[in-house]
Image (cartoon, rainbow, N blue to C red; front, side, top):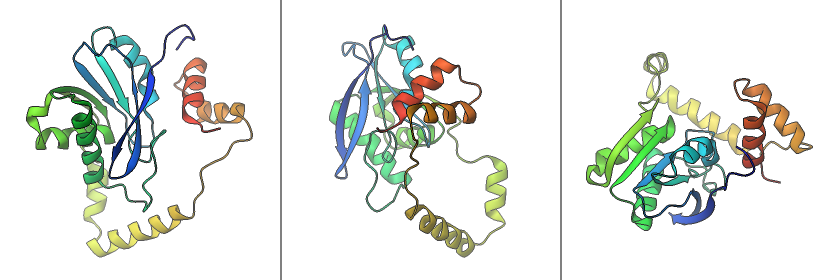
Length: 200
């Protein structure tokens, strides 16, 4: 993104006492369009898409709970029901229905379920990789008992509970890490996503 492209405005809304963040690309007189990111991403991953669509749509991109500038769940719980409720709160509080949604991965899964519960609130939906785990993951899950899967989940939660956010010595170190992990990004894209994705 170039520095001359006007960016979005940041807003907050509340869901289950969590302060959740979203960005609004303006144009409120146009039909609303939500851009919902996937797991371990943030709303600013949609910036290039938002710039391309904002002349024709009122583009809003939320940060899911525990992502980007939204609060982390204090109990470490990130259930599908919680994510769906957050989306329902955003649509309700901002009076966006009937809304159009473009969503990726986890965001797609959330949006598909929301649309199934509230079909009248969703005018159109594009879900990119949002239909759940791939067949190989589902097959591996069937090989374990419910007790084994629950034990694995509990061990993972204990491990995550002791983890601290990754700290980088400088923004340049974070930028290099972004490039290493995402070689398909241009340097400009990696720098933009790094700047938007770190807390200083």
